[in-house]
Image (cartoon, rainbow, N blue to C red; front, side, top):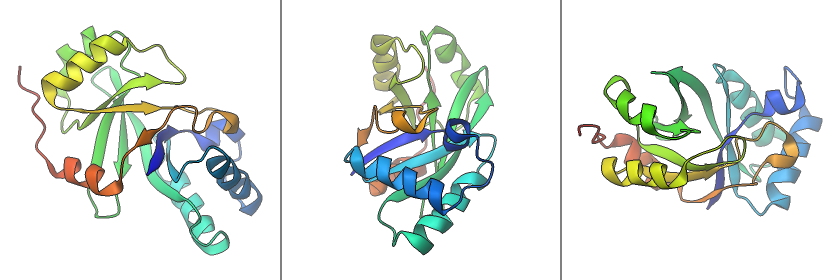
Length: 176
């Protein structure tokens, strides 16, 4: 499946409560980009994604996958939490920057399963992010971090939900 796992729909639209018209625009953008779905990861707000899911289920016959999540600040970094269908939570470091501070913070972060090596909104030192991913066995992700509807799917991952669920249940290797 093709999934963009880091989007901000409320910030993109400034519409506090999604309605059918907005969700139609989201579904259209997802399908135009050839994606199977997105994760909606508002800052500190997981309810927005659940509202979009309800509308997709009711009016759009589950044409696309919407994964609920949120972006939270943890140990001087932003971490995206994805709430998966099996009840597990997949957590990844969003826009890790140069990675130096990030690696020092791993002792303070629990259960990290992935790291962005590409992010549409922020600079990522890709080589350092890949090095960290390999060292700690983290899933390498490319996400749009869309703050506008037109940016949805600018970067995406080819992955299935079963792999995300499986990794979410694994104990991360965060020891040096």
